[in-house]
Image (cartoon, rainbow, N blue to C red; front, top):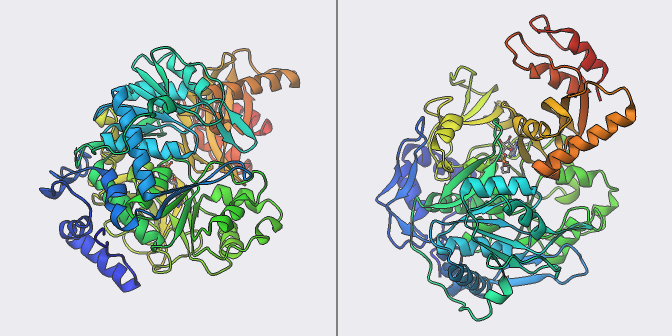
Length: 639
Ligand code: WT7
């Protein structure tokens, strides 16, 4: 029986835990970490230098394997408890259920296959997979072997895969024949094949059969999982990992052009994912928990896989999309599997709000107890719709603010325990010290204040480095404001000290909860043969939160004919889809003859944002521009 982890159960306990976490962090986290399975305990709880060096360590000296904590540790008491429920894309197809013992055996089998292929501790393994149990199993199998997993969301293009594989110098790729996404089927193996034409580091590709599609198998490189798994054992001795050995790389966009590989390590990540999961969602033994995020994003890592499995919970994995076969699918799945905790994104809620209310009212949703939101600010209307029609007014909503770099939830209500106020994330987790800074880096004291959101002290899930380039991590997160981790978000602290996240203050846009750097999209657009220069900004979008608005300058100037204009716009979109993926498609493209630039050549994004937002009557000062006339042209040509 795993030792019971204490959980915060009252407001007073929250405040007491918070106080201890700040005053005596070493003692606080040692206590939280105690019940896990350690092969060796740590020498020091916290170490390294938080900021500006960005070299924090947690539980240094400890030895462990995270999968022993996700799986082996639960076998005695929860061996027959459901670990994973899988709901397929097509509601007519059968769902699947795996107990902790079955999941353990499958992970061991997969680890044996990887081992036989030559995967070793420290190797990077890239996963490009549908949302099917083998994805969860493969991630855990990597961790069991000590290989570093790099999951790439299976909506990214082959170019994006190649960039990520090459950056990590991955020697192995795990993929499938194809995937289902709503009414569409996508030949993912073909996308991988295309990517690997420019990835010399890859030695083996392991292919999982899902759709039963014929695929090209490259002799000597590609193997089928079902062939390799035929005679392998269902046990596998977990590799002993050091606390600070990397567990995974996850690529995310920043304000510069190239996505960076955020690195999280073993012990701190484990403690943070488990602690935040249990406390925020107030998980009980019999809960059925569903996080709708794809494993390709950090939410899928921390709150579909690791957090729930560390806590011994039952986690649901859904292959499909919220609107297939209709806008009632989420609610149907909740009733079907008696989901009690549901965690999704505002963009999904907004897209379902747009459908007739019958889609939600025809389901009972009686099993629900707690609702969660993640990925972007949740607007007032969506919050109330979620609360009233999904939670029937009786389920607390946790609006969880965090980032790929923070590994787990930083600011959020604890369900039913700390305040849940519409559009506010709320109070910080124990161990998290948020501050508001002026642009110059002065701390803004007191409540009812707004500023740049930064974090004053290290926490177990802090980003350890950016793969292959620590300088970049230091420069992006720890050096802008020495002594702090800089989040890139702006926030407001209300009169009661609750935090409300306003949005990014850097050149990052958040489209349906997915982050893109404007420079990243511009780089992609500039690959189009018609384009000489481009500038991308975000603008408010009813469903996506932010939409992508692209201004482009063409080789041959602004075309006169509408048909020519449309042809070029289609080409630009196609280029972005090829370079990054469909998720980064510009919503609006405006062909312009010039961009508003200062005399030093800097693009005045403020003006471009105003036009994209439709605030054309209030453009502000344009006298410092090289060519003020270009602004009129842009305003007149607004999409
Ligand atoms: C950015 C991080 C958190 C995992 C999924 C996204 C925005 C995230 C919230 C929230 C307002 C939020 C921030 C943040 N964001 N959660 N509850 N309220 N904004 O992870 O891709 O690393 O993006 O998403 O702007 O910086 P990510």
